Length: 174
Image 1 (cartoon, one colour):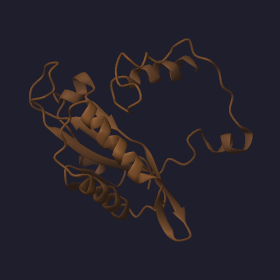
Image 2 (tube, helix red, strand yellow):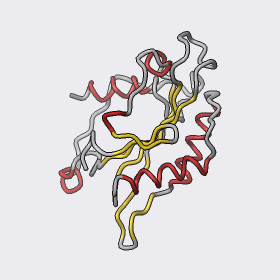
Image 3 (cartoon, one colour):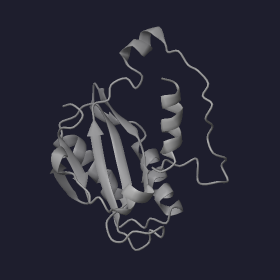
Image 4 (cartoon, helix red, strand yellow):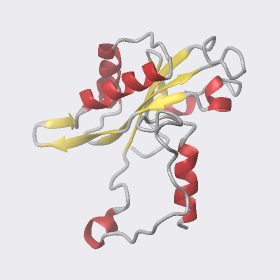
């Protein structure tokens, strides 16, 4: 399967990739109110194996707590959602992206009235920097952009809005 195909788990249901939609007035669209994790599932001689899934999901729940996103799902339910989504897509190896985000209710800086939604997205990502990087290495440069100081927001957590800093950094290298 390629990026953009298969099933996505959204709030307890497996839906077709093309049907995984949110409202344009969802809080996450306007304010970036989401946290996520990135994990890998590897094809092993004993079958598909998720690398440190527990660690990644614990960090996801910690991030949601820091951003006051009270999840309606338990840790076990999200863990099961990941496994169920891998099975539904018949993956033996894939990238795993669980995401928790503020959905549709009202707009404004205060996110608390908005529901907390959860999704699990999977895709075949292969080598992150391309297969050529595995044999030939990569060229790197320093960017003029820097990461924000740790006391400005929870910078050690994966969340959506500050990812704009990563966009600036990666596009400055082009």
